[in-house]
Image (cartoon, rainbow, N blue to C red; front, side):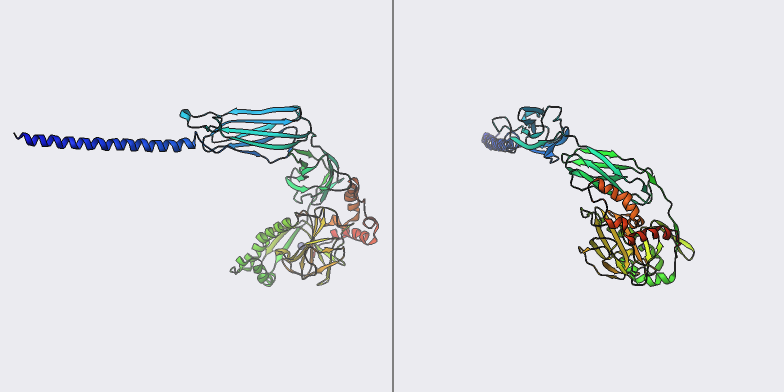
Length: 501
Ligand SMILES: [Zn+2]
């Protein structure tokens, strides 16, 4: 055995273990260092979080009613929410509305709640608050150790005006009798300023207009649907500035009616004559060679699009009545088709489509001058799909009239026109076989029977009687006594009996 060799081996072993222990010590220290840094980062995120919670209160109302619910949203992404307090204060009164603590996690890892939504119902009246200014204060804190271990503090102060007067709607009048497809009018009173008010006709909203000298007096014109839904629900609606809503269901007398059925035969000649014009209305139809297919596209999809356009144009109306008395009709004209005619379209004896005619067709001489039916403001001019070259007038309070299939337009958008001013000339543009005027009346874009607006007696009994209630001029002398208008009204019932040609 060579002892010296053994000794050398032992010494090598010692050297290696010495280096090994150095290495593990460094590794250990590095690990501790990293853990320390990670811990520090973690602690700054939770224990030493510097960001205060975020407070949001919806809706953004400035007015507080007797009982009103808000939604309080609190968030704190870093150390989590620890507590929230809400109080309502006014001189001489203070109410703790909410005091809530949120659970914290073990080992100081902050709160469990990073975002919460709390419904907040303020019962100002029940809590004995008085009408007038008040303050709502929301205070929230998080689980950070900042703020002397109290957490970061956030505060939201919302000045509010307490309004305890309940919103009241008082119905005053409605037409003695509503006609299916006709125009209805309601008048009513609201006891305080409103954010929204009007009439709901089976959910369709017709805005109310504040009229007359007395504050809180309103009227709303509405369309009695021609395709009468069952039941027909009329509900007055008012929403005050604090968001409180009141509804009042109305009772009424209604006269239903049956509409005329009409068959329109589509000739090949008509389809050929109109093909290029129809294709021009929608570029997607350029490739379509079957004239009937093009016609059906226009009579269905384009018609819907055009009626939507009319609805849009007629949303905003002048806030005062611009019209005076009965509307005038196209002079020396014969009725060709009536309102709500139930049309069946036939091609080579086969039924191809069904539509409802939403105006009155009147024929005079070719290219006859078309006078404005009443005073108003031009809100739209130009091509309007199936209606061809058209003019739409706003007569105020939601009342509009449409003049279609024109060959020429002589007015411009935003121009004010007097009753009788010439708007253009009749023609056969759009879905028209021959020269005639398509005349329509709409309430905020919803079609109504124009015959009523030509009739001074209907106006006197159903409209002016109610306008007087809200303090508007009872009726211009012309509307009742003018011989011209009188002749028109006598003509109307007679013309209704005439067969369409
Ligand atoms: Zn028509």
